[in-house]
Length: 622
Image 1 (cartoon, rainbow, N blue to C red):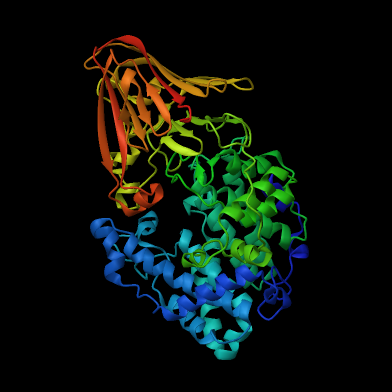
Image 2: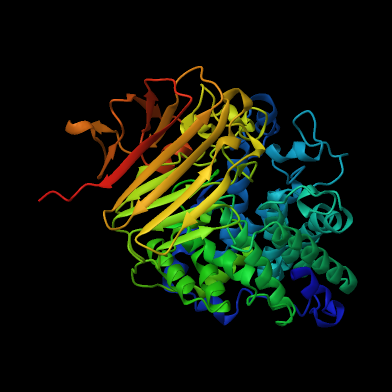
């Protein structure tokens, strides 16, 4: 698809030269003077803050922390702040056209060029880094943020290069030297970067389009040699095709909605660049897979800023509205355009946007095309099943946040950024979370090493799943759902899956068929587990993670916010546990200090049986 389309082009003929390549207006051109007033004000405010901030130091001791104690945040905070400051000042220079920030920008470019490495400490080990610091004699490596850095410098030189040259031509030459040495040359030379997908059959994830989109921009902006430009474009297409090959036709993102912004959305950054650079010769917007990748994000929306957050995704996401509006127009999807405009109205441009800047070509396009839109309802699908990632979503009525919303996940426990969560589900009511997936805490060394599945957020016991014979689920591709059956289209949406394969041998599970049934007429949902074990050591325990503190009420119901939950009280003991959210990221994601875990432990250790939990929206008082 993508690779074939690019390979069919005569790239050396149709690609513009570096001097001719004009992806966006440069500083001093009318388009920047005509920025929307809100965008111009946000840039000015962010630049004022940036000028008042001292550029943060990048210390060896902070870099070493990841190897010594697993902390990656302290170094990354300074690293990202330095780059955000530089690009904020570049945008302000373009918007104001005053040439008053050139010295500060030159200092920022110089400081970034002086860094020993652009690879963050958490990614150093992927290229054999040892001892916790980057050895200058080690071969060059390109991680996510090295690629971002190269693109940032390339865009800075493109947008205000004449002003940097006027201040000191040495700075521009140094920046180009570092970009070539650290990004362009290794990108063209290495087949063994795993994220390229060339050297193994290992599945690629968001790293692939995220890095490739930045590398493509960098090569087109910096490389003067026509043969090398064509080689870079073809290599990028070949690699990005590996990302597309890993997608199922439904376009579902197994990494979750937050990673869509740097997975599917980064693919669209790349496609925009290819379309622009080839004069429209590479145009994949009519391909069904491309269209479905774009539709994923509104199909995964629950309500407002809440999204179905299986895997490492947080519950609340701000989708890339400007990009999605352009993509919606390109694929002729009115629902996506309306979704993007509604998302833009919910999250208008503001100064905080400039505190951590990624995907530069996207942001430039967003600034230049920014507009305001009146608040509007999202075009929310009534129901959808993603066949490839085995995720079902359903709500009471299309386009409405009222009533219940449910989502169910099958899949397996080796997906990118996965948790042990085969068969888990979430439930919302009137747009508010009720039964939830916690998401993930601040990334640390333990998030991606052998300790990952010891973290509470990753374990099945802290998802909405049973423990069987005292065992939770295990990690790996073998841990997967089977015998999926689902029914769509009527008043009742239903899905069933045998999740026995996600439990280890020690659980002694022959079958465990979980069924989620959502009845729109009664605005209710039931989750039923029918299990058969080869032996029993202890009773089955059913776990639920809740947003609101559960309150027991008369008649055996448990109040979960605006929902009543019922279970067979005569057959199970109820235990409530408060889960303090001590990590600042997850506490901020949920906007509260704790979540709550219910454990319903069956009183009898049975070898077979069923257990049903029912949810119903409580009628509004009065």
